[in-house]
Image (cartoon, rainbow, N blue to C red; front, side):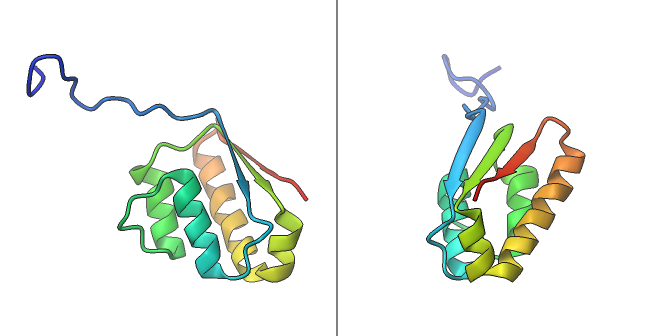
Length: 106
């Protein structure tokens, strides 16, 4: 029974099927985490590191079915290690979540 009349327990959040994130202007890892936090709706306490990113996408937020990055070539050029880590984490996530896909646009 809901806590009060008319309320539902654990409402399902509305998650878009596709989220597009422009990473072309990112110049450092901190900026990348800020963009990911904003665009994926991570909570205020998001730690802005790769362990926190994994925790967020695997349990703190509902992820879209498709994630599309624009400006990926710029991100790889400016912050190659962070781009590689992001790609690795998302590949691991996609292995566990079969309906999830990622597109990396130049």
